[in-house]
Length: 272
Image (cartoon, rainbow, N blue to C red; front, side, top):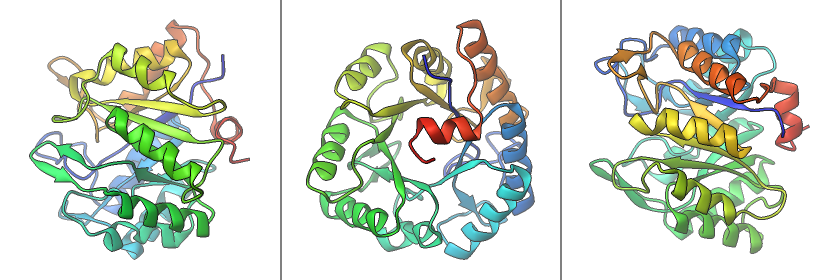
């Protein structure tokens, strides 16, 4: 079984310091939290950015400063900036990080209920994002919240409108209004993957640790972090993203998976 790639999603767009004081907003906080996750074993940092007051933004220059700060704190780390942004942002706003030519970025694969809002990713939007990633030589992390999202991503790549094989997917399970975080749902999604594809699983909220364990056992990769889950265990909030990564590392070692460093992760993801 391949070594395990751990992704740390350090802040997201919805969770706030009111939920957990460790959620980073400022550039210095972002670099600190990324560094803690990296030191604990994360080879990948998934990046949303905020203004200093916590307001989500997709501003290109804010991304530039944050990404540079994380690179300094985490030499060699793989960065996956979000093109999801926050619910209600326009496609043009959301695409700004792709102007910085990252080696990877997320590509959300369908419209869905997202908590109290609607996360709009219609087919024309997906095609525009796919074309941008082709033009800028960016490998997508295809984010799927439902089974139909996987089919849409495969169709997009088959029609040459987004990067194709080898594809990498992130199955985000447990978002209120989307597919629940169950082993059955994860297994069904993995069974639909084309040969050579790689995948990560993200469990949201109480689904975080069951999905992490399932991903480790099933040979996939895992994402943890304050974007998705603020608790280390029931009733105990994580003091940092590093604590969440440390727990994922402990689970992996107990279950017989070694942890991939950034160079190994690049090989597994066909970036090297």
